[in-house]
Amino acid sequence: MPKAFKERHRYECMGKKKKPGKKRTIEKKDVMSAPEAYLSLETAFNSAPRLFDPRRMQKALEEALPHANLKVGIFAFLVGSVLFTTLLFIINRLLIYAFKAVAEEGAAVPVPEELSLLLLFVITVSSFIVTVVVEYISFLVAVRIGGKGTLAQQFYLSSVVQLSLAIGSFIMLGIMIPCIGILMPFLYFIISLYLGFYVHSKAYALVHAIALWKAFAIVVLGIVITLALSVALNIALGEITGGASTSALPGV
Figure 1 (cartoon, rainbow, N blue to C red):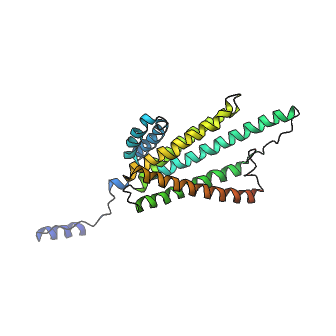
Figure 2: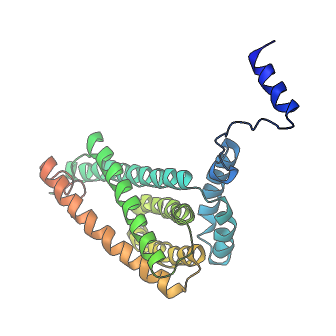
Figure 3: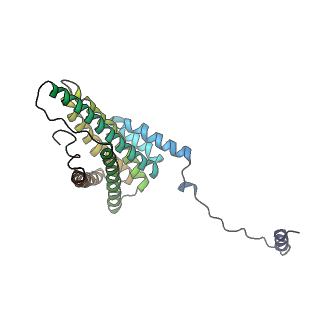
């Protein structure tokens, strides 16, 4: 008779049941299955365009919140950084083409330098890191003043706002359109104010159940920190690349 069977038989004869070994269990709420992760990512991308409409913005944030996931939020931040860098690359090439065409006509205009792939990669990574760091600092501040939300919820909704900003930034491609192109920077400035300040504040207020003015103060603090870090990184990149990062676009 096998030893395991004998041991079990002895416990049953004594009126006892052998206690099973303690198994390590993982709560379902701590793990997100692949379909749930895909749904969370799909919700983020579907919600981003809806934030442009003030009438649908609040509902879009509320419907996205239950799908909050930290990893999806971080990934969406990365996608936003890649979109911004892609736009920078396209505009840089368009400006080079336009300024070269003008120069060929005999006009004395400075032709901007081409952005190298290495520099674009560095810009993407650095902007992503700055965004994540600032978002984490904002979370600590929100919790400090009584915020009740989780890091995953804040990162996720903020990443949706980031995606909206990245999508809206492509309006800058219209800068090459005659007559109306000059309006594109102004339109993007308005979009940035609306999404970056108002919608982002709404997201913080929803996540942490705090007053809108407190959420707005956190957003402003985050933007100030972002600008400070961006200037420091731009100076550092300028030193490393010999000024390429600051002379990639005319007037910058």
